[in-house]
Length: 219
Image (spheres, one colour):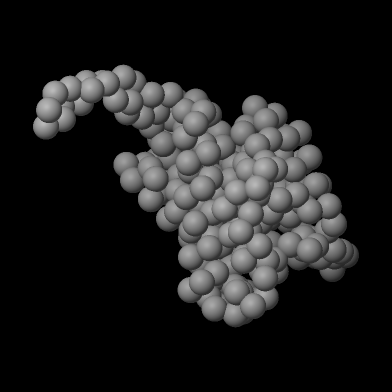
């Protein structure tokens, strides 16, 4: 199921515009802050489809019925670009467990590439709600490889994938491999370059958030 959080006008569209805008991108702290805000918005939207228990809450003047989260949450992100969104989601689900995946593209002479997962730390996810965040999804290979690794740790109750911008190709690829996953997006861009960069996209989220890297580094 695909959830488009910017289908109607909201503050999410403002943060998305700032993430795309080269003027705002000039300040890494501002870029990270806007990604974190997007993570918070995604967390709020995802919270609407989770399960809750009803409890009695004592107030200074009596008692009231309240709702507490029944689901156990695991927040996962792909290093390094996913970290600001990860923190934004944690701001709304502070009791969540955490998973981190390091993946990189291995380029071949013919222009193609594979995605290799080189590091992963993940808790048991059996019957838990997994929220995997990645600011940009181009081909979908990084996300699906990360999910394949995450799913070796149990059978989750739900899978949620949150991304600011996804290519049409990447969205189709994820839906084909994980048809039961919830995919939360702020924008869908149709074009991919020959090197699999999203157009118009917003550039390299990892570099914009944390600075450049050598070609041998993990993204």
